[in-house]
Structure formats: C-alpha cells, structure tokens
Length: 158
Image 1 (cartoon, helix red, strand yellow):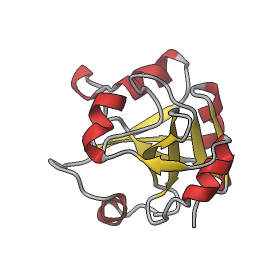
Image 2: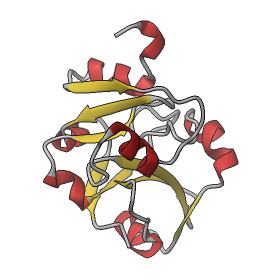
Image 3: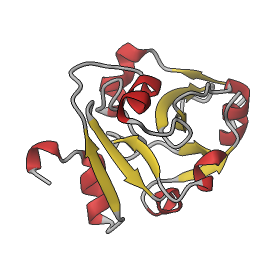
C-alpha cells in the first residue's frame, strides 16, 4: 500500500493489527453505493454505507447499513438510547467527521462516535465499507469491528 492511498481508517486497522483488504476504484466524485456495488460487481447486501446522525441529546452516531437499504430513524434512535435521531446535513459532514460524502466510514472519524451496524453485517465473513475517501474500500470481517471502534449490531433498516 502506497502512502498516497492510506487513510485514517486504514492506519487504525493496521495499528490494531486487524486484517483487511483494500480495493481501489476510479471515481472522481460522489456516486451512491448501489451504483458502485453494481459497477464493481459486488453484492449490495455486503456493501455498507455509513450515515451520521445526531440525537436529541446532541450526541452523534454512525449508522452503517447495506447500500440498498434505508435507515429507520426510530429503530436507530432506539439502538442508541435516544428519543429521536436525525441525519446531519451533508454540508456538515466534513467538518464533523473529516470525511466527505461517499468516503465516510465508521473508523477514523475526527472524533469517534458510537457506531451501529445493521445486524445483517454479521451474516457475512467479510463486508465492504468505505475506505475513508472516494474510490477506496475496506473489506474486513465484521466481527473485528468491535476491536477497533465502539459498535454493536442491531436491526436499523426499514
């Protein structure tokens, strides 16, 4: 891996000695995860997008779910013990996380937020998450995620 493609997420995984694979693809701007999965011949159920939400308490959370699914805000709020959560505006994403839309991942945020992965993640030996920038993916065993970030697996999709 060259230095130019290493992201915070990848560095953290290496520091924690978590095995992962990296996949790089050509992409200059945001394209939704469904189209990326189709373009790369990947299973949509195994490819996870990361959404950032704020709770009524003011706390922030990462919700990771399959790219073709939608976040159920009520289930998401319940999963983190909030009365309600709402997605942050895209324009706030970079200043809050250090990541851009299409490159946001639960690992290596400016400030680590608790993460909830949809429970379907644990059905796979390997899932695909953003690598921390557009055009980079990380493929890893979802069972390794709690060794790296505060996270749990719950039903959070519609």
